Length: 221
Image (cartoon, rainbow, N blue to C red; front, side):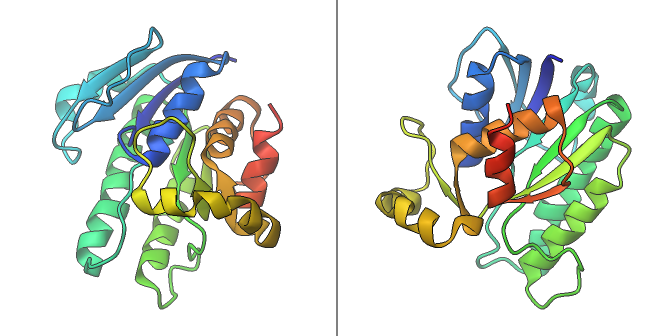
């Protein structure tokens, strides 16, 4: 099958890496990125919509039909955020967008970048993990063809891209050691992008994937 995908979050580190993998992968035929500012990438596969208010997609809804994949890479840190603020960005916004896409594209596979430590019970003491779990659970119950939750830990950035966070650049030299000592919690951005593509093209038995699962799926292309 050929993939026609929408990417949210392409101006962040993860979204930029997923976009990079999609542009070079032969199974990906068409890409639409929706950003608040230009991603700075030009390619024959790629179209871009600049849209300021992600809580109001009515003016661009007609352009969201005809896709069979969404790679949802948007997200914010919970540092210094109250629960109400973090919930609005993490849960409310994600579900608002996902419901529109499910209605427009019932054959869509939705791939959501969550995080290691996410709390599927929704009842834990850690606020961000509880709300990520709530978001995952809701996404898994929307009427998509399939939905997959990706829970990476530390992500080794892809060389040559622009949006790696500075702290990741400091940690990059230590990646081989961390991969040996804690393989369940580390992986590369290349692996994450490939795993998301393969989830759409080949499917996955697991719906919730940690770093080890992501690595296995990345190798199944």
